[in-house]
Length: 111
Image (cartoon, rainbow, N blue to C red; front, side, top):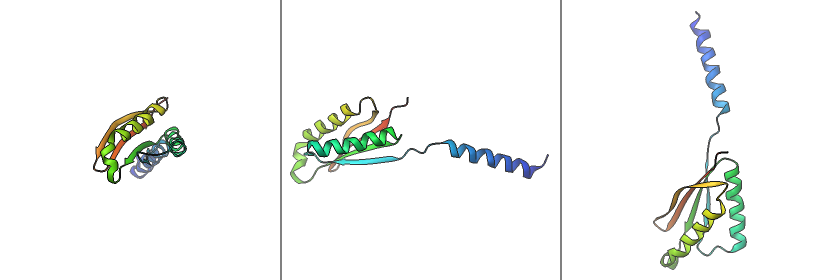
């Protein structure tokens, strides 16, 4: 048996396997607590596009200044995002506060 030929065949099999796999990227969409309806719709369109493309989405809600006192508004907004992606994605991490921002991870649903 030719060892060089064996190594070559093994290398070809590994490169074929790498071609077929899909790398999942994490895309980020940033919101603010008082994001208006049209801006919200545009950002949600991006979230849906990312999920349909097979990527995970990190939804970040950034608070500035006195907005930290109204974290309930941020939680309401992130719950609205979670409701809107119901069929397309599933929530990996529920919204949690990290410093001055609230973060939620959404991954695509396998069909």
